[in-house]
Length: 281
Image 1 (cartoon, rainbow, N blue to C red):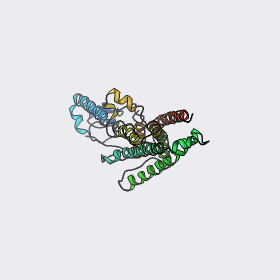
Image 2 (tube, rainbow, N blue to C red):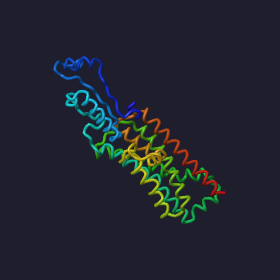
Image 3 (cartoon, rainbow, N blue to C red):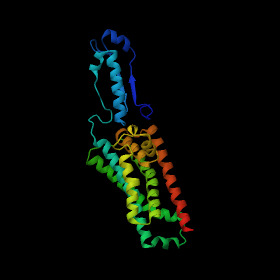
Image 4 (cartoon, rainbow, N blue to C red):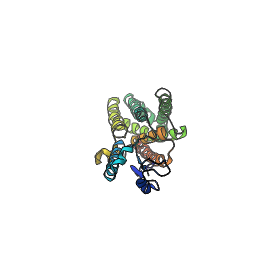
């Protein structure tokens, strides 16, 4: 439940706790130690986890005040509470969004301004071949930037990476499908570098920072913001990156987010291909 995000808090009561409460010791422990309870909270949502912890401790305090004195907090994946452990994966998502969306939108919009796109339309090149020719270079650049950022995060900032490189490659590739398609749509609609840069900033960069869960917890946001975040690829990218860095290849959590990234990527690419066909006609 905690791994998949279905539960935010779990209270574990060991067998024999009731008897231990009356005997003054914990099951299997030395005499004289009080009975022990274990409270597990989901640290990926700090506000929700803190609320669950406070409510549980308040209930324990009301039930038996002396039990609250035995609380010893431990953090499984970030025992030192290093902020960079969660910030660095989010910054990687920002870099990937900038390369995938903004650079693609600017470069293709520049070709519209210079008239080279119309020249391409007059050639026998199909819409799919045209899109692949525009997407592949920036896809390769984004993948290189992802692994270069990973190397810097581990070597320079000391952030642990507990996942596999293959899982990171798949996550980055799925996200780039939607980011590159998003950039091409912006450039095709605007056909102007200034307008394309502004549109990419509003629709790609800001959502990664504000609505991806990278800085602000999504569960504490109003319904409208959470609904918008649900259709943003960056929201699932940040979750996957934080999972890979801190927890590893937790597939029950990774697979649903990767599937959403893939569906959003196919949607953006199909939309781009459909619109490009109309332009070619």
